[in-house]
Length: 94
Image (cartoon, rainbow, N blue to C red; front, side, top):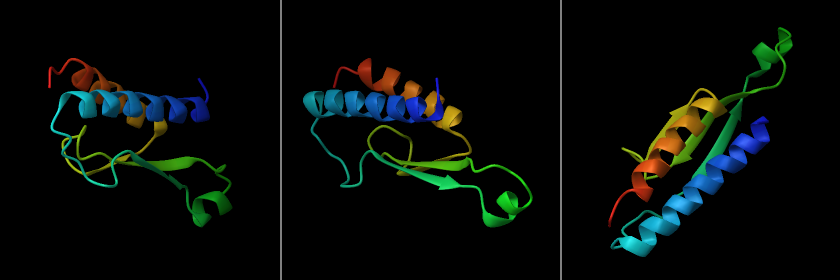
Protein backbone atom coordinates (compact mmCIF):
# COMPACT_ATOMS: atom_id res chain seq x y z
CA UNK A 1 0.00 0.00 0.00
CA UNK A 2 1.46 3.37 -1.00
CA UNK A 3 1.55 6.37 1.29
CA UNK A 4 -1.32 7.98 -0.59
CA UNK A 5 -3.37 4.79 -0.34
CA UNK A 6 -2.70 4.70 3.41
CA UNK A 7 -3.88 8.30 3.75
CA UNK A 8 -7.04 7.49 1.80
CA UNK A 9 -7.59 4.51 4.11
CA UNK A 10 -7.22 6.77 7.16
CA UNK A 11 -9.88 9.12 5.80
CA UNK A 12 -12.18 6.27 4.76
CA UNK A 13 -12.00 4.61 8.17
CA UNK A 14 -12.55 7.88 9.97
CA UNK A 15 -15.53 8.80 7.78
CA UNK A 16 -17.09 5.38 8.36
CA UNK A 17 -16.53 5.66 12.12
CA UNK A 18 -18.00 9.19 12.16
CA UNK A 19 -21.04 7.99 10.20
CA UNK A 20 -21.58 5.32 12.84
CA UNK A 21 -21.04 7.76 15.69
CA UNK A 22 -23.52 10.31 14.34
CA UNK A 23 -26.11 7.61 13.64
CA UNK A 24 -25.91 6.09 17.12
CA UNK A 25 -25.02 8.92 19.52
CA UNK A 26 -26.13 12.34 20.68
CA UNK A 27 -23.89 13.84 17.99
CA UNK A 28 -21.71 15.90 20.34
CA UNK A 29 -18.59 16.95 18.43
CA UNK A 30 -16.29 19.79 17.47
CA UNK A 31 -16.30 21.57 14.11
CA UNK A 32 -12.79 20.38 13.18
CA UNK A 33 -13.64 16.67 13.42
CA UNK A 34 -11.77 14.54 10.91
CA UNK A 35 -9.13 17.09 9.96
CA UNK A 36 -5.96 15.40 8.64
CA UNK A 37 -2.80 17.45 8.10
CA UNK A 38 0.62 16.52 6.82
CA UNK A 39 3.99 17.96 7.77
CA UNK A 40 7.07 17.29 5.66
CA UNK A 41 10.71 17.07 6.65
CA UNK A 42 12.48 20.40 6.94
CA UNK A 43 14.88 22.30 4.72
CA UNK A 44 18.00 21.18 6.59
CA UNK A 45 17.08 17.50 6.34
CA UNK A 46 16.38 17.83 2.63
CA UNK A 47 19.56 19.89 2.10
CA UNK A 48 21.53 17.08 3.77
CA UNK A 49 20.22 14.70 1.11
CA UNK A 50 17.17 13.25 2.78
CA UNK A 51 14.33 12.86 0.26
CA UNK A 52 11.05 14.66 0.77
CA UNK A 53 8.95 12.63 3.21
CA UNK A 54 5.97 12.94 5.51
CA UNK A 55 7.49 13.73 8.90
CA UNK A 56 4.22 14.19 10.80
CA UNK A 57 0.56 13.39 10.46
CA UNK A 58 -1.89 15.43 12.51
CA UNK A 59 -5.43 14.22 13.08
CA UNK A 60 -8.08 16.19 14.92
CA UNK A 61 -10.66 13.91 16.45
CA UNK A 62 -12.40 14.86 19.66
CA UNK A 63 -14.97 12.12 19.02
CA UNK A 64 -12.79 9.13 18.13
CA UNK A 65 -9.49 9.76 19.90
CA UNK A 66 -8.57 10.26 23.55
CA UNK A 67 -7.93 14.00 23.05
CA UNK A 68 -8.54 16.62 20.37
CA UNK A 69 -5.27 16.79 18.44
CA UNK A 70 -3.18 13.72 17.73
CA UNK A 71 0.30 13.78 16.22
CA UNK A 72 2.02 10.83 14.60
CA UNK A 73 5.58 10.44 13.33
CA UNK A 74 4.52 8.44 10.27
CA UNK A 75 1.56 7.56 8.11
CA UNK A 76 1.86 3.94 9.29
CA UNK A 77 1.57 4.99 12.94
CA UNK A 78 -1.46 7.16 12.17
CA UNK A 79 -3.13 4.36 10.21
CA UNK A 80 -2.60 1.84 13.02
CA UNK A 81 -4.19 4.22 15.53
CA UNK A 82 -7.12 5.10 13.25
CA UNK A 83 -7.77 1.39 12.68
CA UNK A 84 -8.07 1.00 16.46
CA UNK A 85 -10.38 4.02 16.75
CA UNK A 86 -12.50 2.59 13.93
CA UNK A 87 -12.67 -0.84 15.58
CA UNK A 88 -13.70 0.73 18.90
CA UNK A 89 -16.37 2.95 17.35
CA UNK A 90 -17.86 0.25 15.16
CA UNK A 91 -18.23 -2.04 18.19
CA UNK A 92 -19.92 0.70 20.28
CA UNK A 93 -23.67 0.45 20.73
CA UNK A 94 -24.22 4.18 21.08
